[in-house]
Image (cartoon, rainbow, N blue to C red; front, top):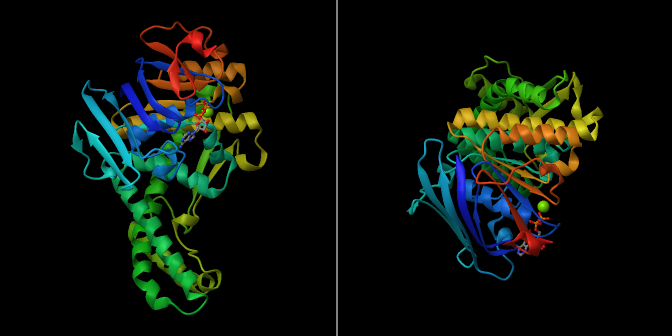
Length: 377
Ligand SMILES: Nc1ncnc2c1ncn2[C@@H]1O[C@H](COP(=O)(O)OP(=O)(O)O)[C@@H](O)[C@H]1O
Ligand SMILES: [Mg+2]
């Protein structure tokens, strides 16, 4: 798909910004703090109905304003045009998403229709950070490719929050009867989450191996492995996972009372990333981390393209500042061959060889607006 144009109204520091995008590459240039990242965030918000940074909609609302909206036109791979609009009203705390002027019945039904891959410094946590950061990464990829998974994971998270509330309020005292209905839901949703994550990691492995080779161009072998909170093999059925989860819950009950939190289930899963058989977290250099992350994201692109039957748009925020010249150029030509890309940068150095035309356009961003080249200087 392609984003043809977009208008941002009261979105972070953009009070009224319009873009006519080029079909291939769109480079957003400007000094720090001018609103480049905000513009990318708006694009993903518009495609996914939510922010990749902020968890609350009110955060992206321009300070002292009551209402934001993003609207624009998209063209899918098969040439169909969609007019999208997402609007948020702070007084009502309500968000509205419309496709061709019709309300989307559920936000979850939009996810996966307009796939987006974001590569930003925020993602560094995927390779550097805690298990939760890796779970979030795979959850967002799987959610964009499977609505059923998204519903399961959202419901699962709600169940864990409820159980945690019960366990906190029990203050270490017996609360088994209160937990029982939530345990059933945890087992039901949790088993499906584990099974789907297991399947996903197996499917995703060849994608990451392939993209790593394309970017590094040499033999460093990346591997992604699933370490679920209950043991599982490729052929383990969902019923079997359920019974293992049930056993683990029973076993952990006393600890849960003591620690006042949920201790069994896929919110404790780990995803292990390794390079040449060694855990990335423990030994990799900065450059290897970054390259690995880029490979994960390009792999995500190809994975979503196949699963969603739609070419994702690729958003690259401040990526080239962290890679050496050689890998930057490789990455640039690679992403250029993928589909429509949106790239932010503070300088034009990387784009010296680019011919700006209808396919490739640059925008200068200053103080939450698009300005012409002379004004940007
Ligand atoms: N909700 C908001 N309302 C108004 N301004 C905001 C809001 N959120 C962030 N900003 C402003 O946006 C600017 C940062 O924009 P950003 O897109 O991150 O810059 P960059 O061009 O470096 O990527 C800061 O000046 C910040 O104060
Ligand atoms: Mg930025």
